[in-house]
Image (cartoon, rainbow, N blue to C red; front, top):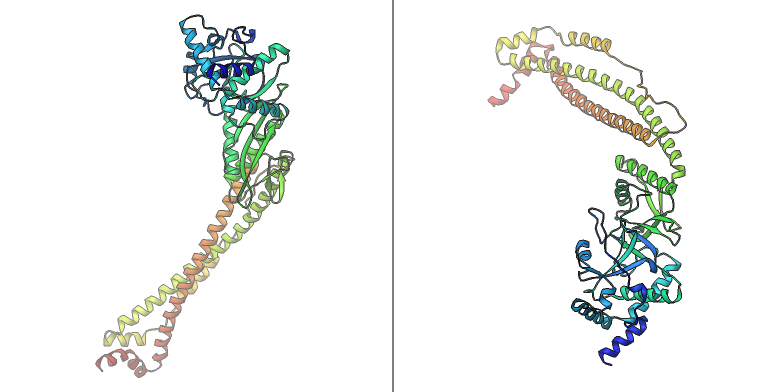
Length: 477
């Protein structure tokens, strides 16, 4: 088959008569499209059912990966490629015939089959295979849809499918709708603000460890739903896809408030709150805490229960703090007493060791009076008198009310964390004091045994003299 026959067969498939062009392909159209600032083209955010009749076709010599500005600058209406009136028109017409020659009918048939399915049901993931080939834009200025078809692309099947359907519409009067992504169109903001969009992505990543994809989807009746698709671990590190569909403002508000409340609790107090994420029966997400599914409808109940529980625990810990502080003060007195006892015994041992160095010192130590702990006994009695205890428990001031806010729960949980830390630190202080007292007691006991042995040998001057000089005798030997 020669090229001419091949082109004729493909034109016949499209039902496109270049000698008698249908009116629908002779539209004057100018690309007047202004994308949102900092918008990324690869992120298709809006999917719609768009009637074939409302899409204007322009061909652009720019590549699909070029900027929108370049595409618009190099765009021309489809009819300028169909009518070879002048030299430029002949060149364009030749390019169009080359596109026809490279056209793949099987690929167009696949699009037809796909769109038949899409008219019945929106895909679970919203996006579908090779959806980026459509290159359909919406102009806020003209309120029209435009296909900017790059003539340099190898795959122009979407363009020829649209041409074929437009011709069919003109002949039969039956308009079809195609489900397509709208390039460079931002969210309508009917459900969420820009900051809330960012929050939802952040919140869901916290719970699922996967960045979600979010779309605004319009059905055939222009009803808007906000759909979120992502992955999360379903069972033993096996990931599964979830999809959340928000059909109205009320659903969107409830979802956002629930997600935000759980995110605040889990990130502020990860040691207390961890919400398990599960795939729900409808394919969405469930948040589970203590084996209970947390939904917006029972969120208020959860907040109240957790508030009262944390308040009660804080009050109990406050009572424990009072007891621990009393014990701490008692141990401080005991430590001080043991330090004094050890100081006196150490002084007595030091005196003995100094006196045994000389003859007169030994005589003096033997005849000195036993004045051991007269002062210590008095000090101990003074310490007991100065011991201060308190039974006053700090009160946690919070009004009793029917409903509590997430802010109330955060505040009481911070109080609970502070008191818990205080209990922990006080217990550590008590343990340190008990260890210190044990060490001082052992040192004082060792010194006492040494002094007791000295006193035992002071019964006889000769025995004492022998005891004192035993080290010297050993050295001389």
